[in-house]
Image 1 (tube, rainbow, N blue to C red):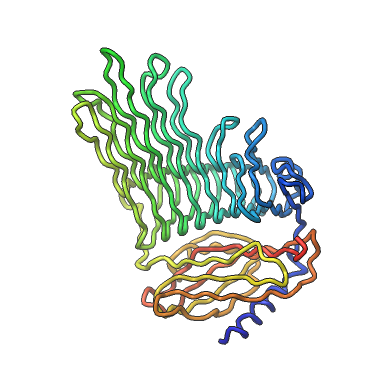
Image 2: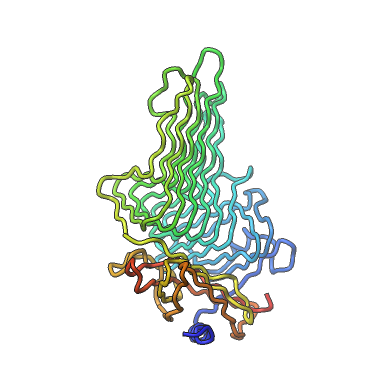
Length: 431
């Protein structure tokens, strides 16, 4: 199929659904060019189904450190430039709710505590793309508290992460007499009683705190944070770099048991499941040094229950759609797989999540499915790029279209493989 033909197919597919999926838009601009300058207020007041287009700026300020709370509603928050927010929480989503976060850098400053992103008690779908999530560092009061996870997911149906950075908070050093022991580094991602998928992400457990000695009282170094820590968790990983954090050091001549241990890359307990494509880079954290200069145990690649792992004999396929895209401009589609891959793009109006028995990977598109077409074949390096013009759909400044997309790689030596997902956000050319 020629480039022109592919563009026509793509445009026609979008045109068929434009009138059905247009959502209301709120423009947030820290410099005053939008409808509001206050992102937390916009999130709180937005109606279910709204789309927040957030222009470049630092929104991580205020009494609660710019914290964003999404409660029991569908919402899309899309960065239009470099956007920094406070910590983000998503909770109590209903089965039909969906939250899309794209291009956000979430930090925890002095006016907030906790993980960069927390998803809890949610039956709906959460989609996190091109985000940078960092947990709060450890601190001490009457004891040393551990670093927080970059992202924390609990009691939730599914969270999909694509091309995102997840970093735990650094553990706290001991401080006699207030914190006699140092604290552990935070995991990059912590999952409890939930399902998650990670595509092309970098997930890093944090360094632990060190024992800062005082006369006559030697002590141990704390344990490093796991890259991914889970209990009763279903975890799917494809094309990621997952690293455990280094342990802290102490000054004991005879090291205490249970300390000085580097973080595991993936650490799962309970009724856990780990599904993975080959090619993820897993690195355990270094052990901490005791008082003799001897390192503690190095973290391992996987510390998981026996029988919980399933490996798909295929390598990851990367896929991304640029955005947000304005009418009358061009959208860029990038694919990276194996040489001469033939692949098809599928488009849906909502996210979903379930493994496909007929393919290797996790299907992340919901219902209804509105388009599917063979986009092309990869070159000798496994790469493919398409720059497609978008027409004017007649959207107004208060309208947006969101399409959830994923590639099905066909006819390859790996068999049928599902790619990373990407959300295509289309807005009016006046925005």
